[in-house]
Length: 464
Ligand SMILES: *Cc1c(COP(=O)(O)O)cnc(C)c1O
Image 1 (spheres, rainbow, N blue to C red):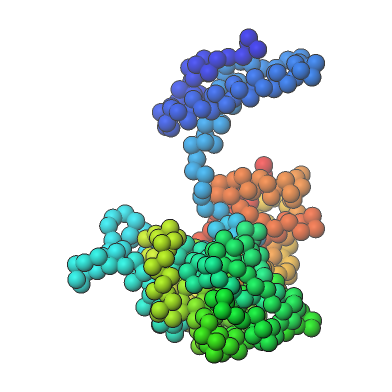
Image 2 (spheres, rainbow, N blue to C red):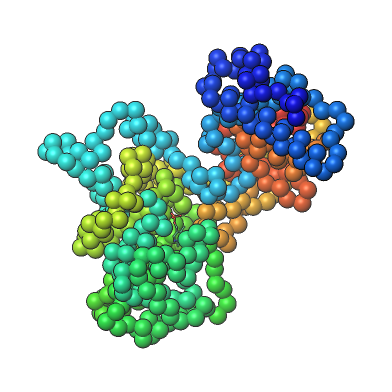
């Protein structure tokens, strides 16, 4: 213990002195403290277990070089870009939807200076940040009014809190969804102050079940899209239109939580059907909520469209302020929504749609080109192109299997899981898929401009 160098002693070592020129001193001090502390702990532990290692290098230069590595790690930004080679398009852990160039540019344009976020340029008076989005959302959805909040979980919470706190909300037992572990309809309901009234059964719920649950305490009927699972077999659910008619005849608002926000007709792209926002509005839903960063392909946001009077009440809720979106979200969501004004433009410009609609021929061509390049740079690794499937992810289209072509890599000298770890720790990190002892790369989710970086990262990782 006495031989363990002090932190001050480490800081005088040349490798740490040099680092002090390029990074804040406090990072280096913290790294040196951590290194000395971890040596102290392992010495103590070894002594307690009765056996100090025969020879252990406690020289200041040795510890300083470890501290330097730690400091370099700490000086790097924690959040940064990764290459998603997994084939899961909406990977929640990888930031869900990659933005269209137009949306990224919109963020940049309002971030470096001032903007008219809440300023009405015509009158010179205070304006609303929602004004930049509402007209577009009404145009695309056919709704009377719209308001955007932090995410769809916040949207559902705010809607329930505004129109049903202290009252009852009727939901089918087949629709009590959990999304990503932290969003569960019963929990959101109770947090909002509304009381959940479950009707029907897991597989079958009829209109008469909803009807029987109505009383003076009923504040809303809620229809939740089962976005991340399907109930198959003997099933019955009530159509949006039927539920809306029931609500209207009883003068009770009907809410739809759609999960993903889809404006496109997915059958045109060989994808399983998803309820579209404009169809839910046309069916008579009074309020419709959906995410900005699932199938919409925009930034994280929760979008609420519906009747003007109800949306007005939601905006006046004190909690709306706590859940409001910032200017980066407004800018990038506006730019994304503008792309939807022309369907072909949306599919071509929004990365999520480009990825979801990529054809077999294109994917095979990209996989083969990638494999050819990898054969040149990855030496003796076994490299094949094989058919496979990609996933939509993000709790959307759970049964969709998107046919793709994968590059399968059998590295020499290292196991596929070890190579996958090496790729994760590279710069930029590369996230791959592992299946049956093979490392798989799916071109579907690799942005074309990342292909060169990917090849370099793989070449480095295979060489070790
Ligand atoms: C994803 C989802 C949510 C939560 O949306 P976030 O934008 O992730 O907060 C809520 N309801 C349904 C049905 C969903 O699919």
